[in-house]
Length: 258
Length: 258
Image 1: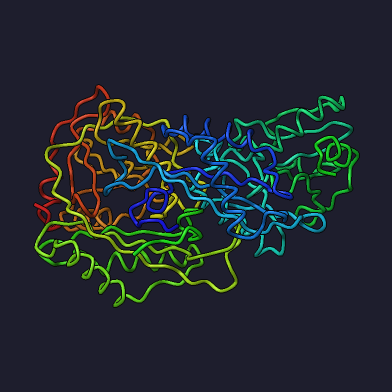
Image 2 (image 1 turned 90 degrees about the horizontal axis):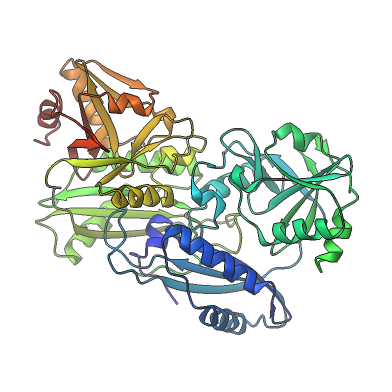
């Protein structure tokens, strides 16, 4: 499948995506991804694709790539479809679905983090959605790579910790777990939600907070979450190194990610 | 030409665009557009396309659309090209050029403005570039349309006036002209630059400012600028109506836009 050059996903970043992990043919947490996609569509004023159509397209993409038995990332892209010149959407929307699959081996070892200067736009609803307008995240990641790190920490425009470029952030301090509140301009990550639920089951105290970067620098342990990696510990943020912490292994296990 | 679904412009909004006005076959202010594109590429770490290649593609697009003699918008899209999964660009970049042309009649009458709640991300370099991650602008415009207006006024995350969704903003007050400073998260518009230069020639006092929304509500006159519309007066912002002002007609004339 190819995309016409008047697709609004291509011209204006007007659309959403989801990245689902496939393992041995199972589409992990597919229903949660479909629910989030539907919520994102409502926020952007787009109709959502039929779940059965999405699942079929994902299975076809896995098969076409020969990845039915692999650990793979299946990416769904849902755009506002073709449109005329300018910012206004056409009167009749014809959204476009595109699905691709690629190998996604589990990352080896903990992540080294670097603080990016590109700010997360907590003043836009798009900061809480997985949209095609992802350039700020691309730039933040590039800054982290240039600093010799694996992943970026993004602060919002108030200087509060928001997220990594492609993951949610959690940190442990004095026996408590913390993660930025969604209002900080944070994607409602599916693994983020699972970890919050798992912490409740394990009776680990957890706070969704507005916190400055110093909170992260003062943490005992830090870990990243997203649908592809599950939970991944962070070993450092700049010059600051972190321990392994008490919570990540137990949370990984209860989330089926150990 | 079609776009492969792994193009990073499509998947991540990783790229830039320019919209050049063609009139009777002339590509207005082409060299200024090429200069801005080159600066944007430098900011994003992309190589820039050869100017001769761009001009050739623009003339071909006009011809293919049968618009050689028309007032038309020629849109150039320059992406980071195809890439693998994830945020990191491939080691070897192969940027992709796409050019389309569409009729662009001069808008009739002044614009009615509405204040959008979607904030401009002054904390990202992308807010000063014409990038493919334009969803905030799409959402701001949609808010303005829903309010019965033609165009949105966007404030940055500090509440300072930044720009319209698809234009720069100027306002007149007590014999002076004002426009938001680029540091407010403002695209360095080509017409914006022309108007600033024209104001200097006409000895109209002009300030590039950080100003709250009240500055706009207290203005005597407001106008929009971009490469396609030239200068376009605004008749209102919400319930507030504006006069025609003294400056816009003189500036239009000296910019060759009367």
